[in-house]
Amino acid sequence: MIYDVVIIGAGPAGLSAGLYAARARMNTLIIEKEAAGGQIATTDEVANYPGSAENATGPSLVSRMVEQAEEFGAKRITDTIESVDVTGKVKILKGENEEYQAKTVIVATGAVPKHIGCPGEKELTGRGVSYCATCDGAFFEDLEVFVVGGGDSAVEEAMYLTKFARKVTIVHRRDELRAAKSIQEKAFKNEKIDFLWDSVITDLKGDGLLETMTVKNVKTGEETEIHADEDDGTFGVFVFIGYDPANKLFEGLVEMENEYIVTDDNMRTNVPGVFAAGDNRVKSLRQVVTATADGAIAATQAEKYIEENFG
Ligand code: NAP
Image (cartoon, rainbow, N blue to C red; front, side, top):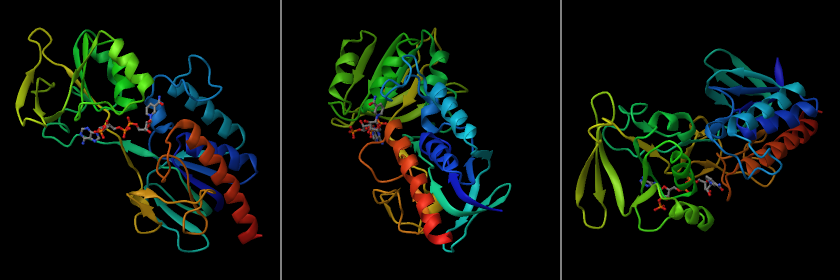
C-alpha cells in the first residue's frame, strides 16, 4: 500500500504531524526506531509548553500526544529506516523489518545528545556517565555529580540533580554560562551547586564504575585528577553540551546546513513531497512548542501537496 504520509520519528514534531495528518483523514504512518517521545521523553519538567499541566513531565506529555495521534487514526510502528529513495513521485523507505511507500515523507528525526569525545566516555556510559538526568539521577543519591556544559540544559539539569546528589559541580569550558539569566540566577543561589570554570574533561577511568576523571584548565593547560570519595567509590558525570541532528539518512538527498535540514516556512525541503519538522531542521528555537508547530504545518502542507500532485 502507498501511505499518504509517512512520518519518521515520534517525538513532539512527529506526533503532532501524525495528529494533524490523521485528523485530515490522510492515511498516516508514524515510524519510530525506539520508544516514542524523542528527547522530551527524558525531560523531567516541562514548564514552558503553553497549557501543559502544572506537574507535566516529558513522559506524561508524550503519552498524551501518542494517544491523540492514535485517536485520530494515525498508525504507529517500531522500525529502523535504513535507506530512503525520495527521487520519485512515490517515496520508498527501506526499514529493518519492512519497506514502506509514501506520497509524502515528514522527517521528524530530532537530535541526539553530543558526547565529550574523551577516552573512557563510551565504556563508562551507564556506569557513571549519563546524558539523561531524569533517567539516571536517582542512582546518584548522596553521591557527588559533575555536569558538563553551560547552556540551559546543563544548568537546569544540574538543579534537578541536586534533588539526589550531595553536591553538583558544573564543569564549563568558559568562565561564563550560556544559559538564560533567569536560570543562571537560580543556579547561583543553589547551595549544592559549585562551578569549575574554564575546564574540560579529558579522561574518564574506572573499573566497572566511574572512579577517576581528568579535568584540564583550558587557560593554564593544567590537568587535575579528580577521584571518587573513598566511601562513595564512584561519582556521576552528566553531559549536556548540545545536540547533533539525526539526519544521516537524508545526507546528500535534501539540502542541509551544518547537518540540519533546510526548509521554507511551510516545512518544505528542496525535494518535492519531503518535509522536515522539529529539532533536525534549521531554526532559531528548538523547543516542544516549536516542534509541535512544525509538525502541524508539515502535515497540512503534505495534504496540500497530495491534492495538487495526486488529485
Ligand atoms: P546549547 O545551548 O548549545 O549549550 C551547549 C553548552 O555546552 C554550551 O555552554 C557550550 O559551551 C557547551 N559545549 C558545547 N560543546 C562542548 C564541548 N565539546 N565540550 C564542552 N562543552 C561544550 O545546548 P543546550 O543547553 O542543550 O540547549 C539547546 C537548546 O534548547 C537551546 O536553544 C536552549 O535554549 C534550549 N533549552 C531551553 C530550555 C528552557 O527554556 N527551559 C531548557 C533546555 C534547553 P559554550 O557556551 O562555550 O559554547
